[in-house]
Length: 385
Image (tube, rainbow, N blue to C red; front, top):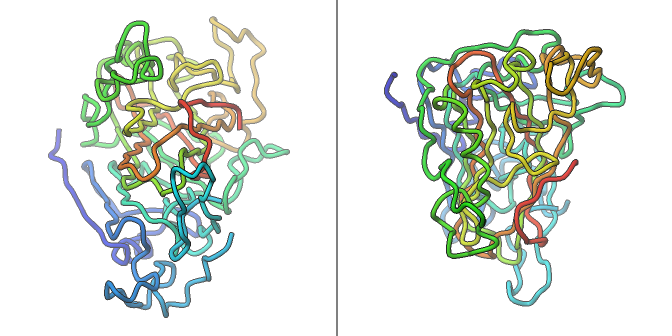
């Protein structure tokens, strides 16, 4: 396995890199890299760089879309998600929701975080990082697929993120055979803080808070993980920071697809998607299918199967909802919505990770959109959405 290469980019450098390597108007590319690369955006968590706080010396640099004053950025003071600069958070113990509005900003860039609704100029900021091959991450404009009414419309702004264990852009290509090996992205073990180890046989962290930090609070990862032999073609999006004061939860939308279906359905090639939350009240997977299983080829409830299999979809088994995507002849879920509780003001980490299990061919893919802070709280839950 090739050594891990780490590249740390400021917001301006990332913008230049995207501009220089962009494949087309709706794709996010970060150049060619044959190893696991980390692209990090750093700054003052909780404020946009140059957002008008003159006491910290931030100034405009002529880079529209980074939130610097004087750059011609749109006014972000109106719009359902993040804490706005200059707007008081309120008292986290007051019982009132003070999470301010959000204005979609993915029209100004192909930044994957903007496409998800995160780190828009002038709004609440977190540290972000992408780890994986450049081809495994893609920003798509408009609905995914051609089915009418749209199976996968955008849910926030006009873009969504595609994260893949192969070439992410291929998901948008009707009939493409999504099977790409990405050299150097095979960690085998899950990177910290992700862990397949359950916290208990009969208890989750909701049942016993003393288990927090000892493993996967959901107890859902290990059964699926143990069906294979390590993570290959691994890619993740990671965000860290402090929960906005006044917020007690977050939500986001996703859908999962796999080329492994139907040939390797119910086999050891059990590709997985994990959304990991590291917080004071939960450490573990937070995204599941409609029946409470983790998101994997074998456990996940695949709403749309476009080929028959001997287990649960005899011929004819068709899913016209996947028309216009690379998953024609394969399978995927509908849009799902995950929500989970957090503690106002606490440090947190959220990781969105996808990988092949046991080998690095036949890709699995997740689309992500519409991240928002909220005041719902409670244990993790996933519903159709």
